[in-house]
Amino acid sequence: MKKITIAIDGFSSCGKSTMAKDLAKEIGYIYIDSGAMYRAVTLYSIENGIFHGDTIDTDELKRRIGDIHISFRIDPETGRPNTYLNGVNVENKIRTMEVSSKVSPISALGFVREAMVAQQQEMGKAKGIVMDGRDIGTTVFPDAELKIFVTASAEIRAQRRYDELKAKGQETGFEEILENVKQRDHIDQTREVSPLKKADDALLLDNSHLTIAEQKEWLMAEYQKAI
Ligand code: C5P
Image 1 (cartoon, rainbow, N blue to C red):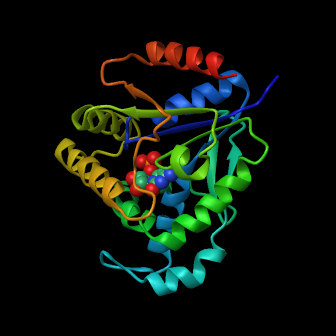
Image 2: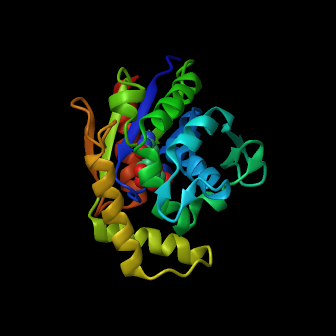
């Protein structure tokens, strides 16, 4: 069967990853979470003294960017992909509030984006891939056969992230999460390099009031049209 490239972009915490992961599983495609890659670079920067408070030592990060190797491996128990940073499983460590609050300035750096985009394009060379992120349909795979741009209100997205963190035992105030969601939206939309933006040929999906099942049905129908 014909294999295509599927790009799913959108705002933070709008359920892109869940949606992309489920779709990939259903149709037997590889799933890549590009946000996890920017989170891994952020974790590396935190752990290697590249942050001085909120200031990034960009010269040092530029020197080291070639030493940052990110890969994904399927967890045999859950069947879900885990993120590896230089051979170490960092799946949980990259989802903390500390990483969330520092990832947007890291991903606004041109040389970081160049390095990640090159790795993402390599991963998608053979097609049969679902990748989610912010610039997949605009920059990474501008020729993707199916592009979706997902959005939902900031409050609904913050509530989803709150529930997710709570389920993992990480208690964080709702207001703090909402502030983080809004701040990331702002930085992601206004950065100079590859700002978050709907590709002209992307389909818009506002899932504020959709159930997971309704969303899945919509997505499968669009996939069937695209192949
Ligand atoms: O998708 P997630 O929220 O985990 O992404 C974390 C951060 O990584 C985003 O807030 C954004 O700053 C950045 N990102 C990006 N480009 C992508 C994916 C994520 O700039 N393709």
